[in-house]
Amino acid sequence: MAGDIANDITLIRGSALCALLGIRYPIIQGGMTLVGTGHLASAVSAGGGLGVVSAGRMDEATFARETDFALDTTDCPLAVNIPIGRAQEWTEACFNIAIKRDIKAVLIGGGNPKPWCPLVKDAGKLLGIVVATPDQAAKAEAAGADFVVAESIEAGGRTSREELAGVTLIPAASERISVPLVAAGGFVDGRGLAAAMVLGADGVQMGTRFMLAEESPLHKNTFSAMLAADITDTLVVGTRHHMGRRLLRGQASEMVHGSEISASREDMIAMLSGEWSRQGLHLGNLEQGMIACGQGVGLIHDVLPASTIIENTAREAEAHLRRALSIFGALNEQSSGNA
Image 1: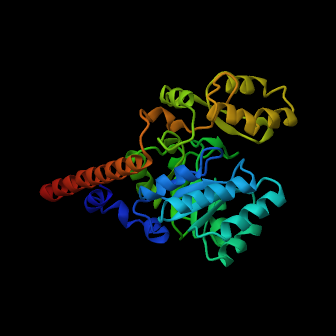
Image 2: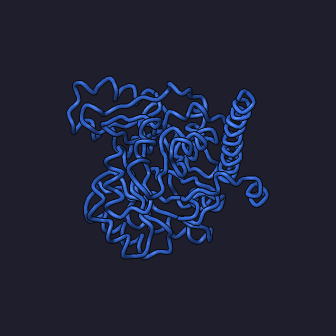
Image 3: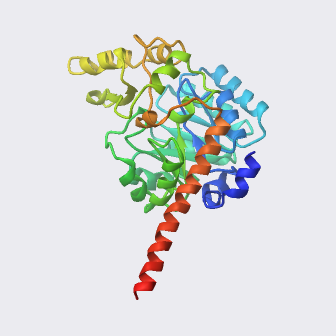
């Protein structure tokens, strides 16, 4: 089926991101902690996007195992995401695992990427760097990034202090770099992909949408809570201590939000620990657990295979881009006629 769709889709397949990564459609899976497993990454890659195994909250052995599983179950391009805010020893181990395997790209986020860039480049892997401002985008390219992921405030999980919206971040970042730009934050369908490309991006990163893929490791209770959400049903916690996180509204996230004024930094670190996320994501404990997701959650109404999500997004994006072109074509015809 993907081959038939590809014959109908020409506008988005011309993206520089597709050419760089060797993927059919300019769609990257977000590097989601506790969600970016080998099973999900493999399904996304097989569906024509770039699947990403996320090292976040995995020990070294688990990260190696999940990466190997993804590589064993698809021959399509794969990537890994390594957050660099954790312990040095763990970070070094994850990079060593990544560069020794036949992956296409390594994505870096969560801290200063500069010390780690040579490792990736010397290993012959493509380097993607996640940023939150146009200045960071320019610095990422200067550090050797082959592509840049610009993540706006609409995104789930970790948020930036600058709180830039995608409609301003994407065009501003695109003016500062010459390598492919990936828009992230609130993109869940073809309308978003089309809009991102018009704003200057070469593709999108989707996290929340792939959380609601059939191959996602989420608990059925978590699926239900996310499907019931509206675009207003997320909130950002932790900003007082510069550790902002966008979470689904719920008993636990509301409690954290309400206690921020009096909570110490140590209290906030404990409240935003991986165990709280595991309770919400994997165990379906909606009273005590928390679910990191983006504002786009309110635009998602079903759980589908990753390949179907990608096919639908690609088809919708193509239709919306052609619709926009037809509108401008009609306007040009009217102008010619009036002249």
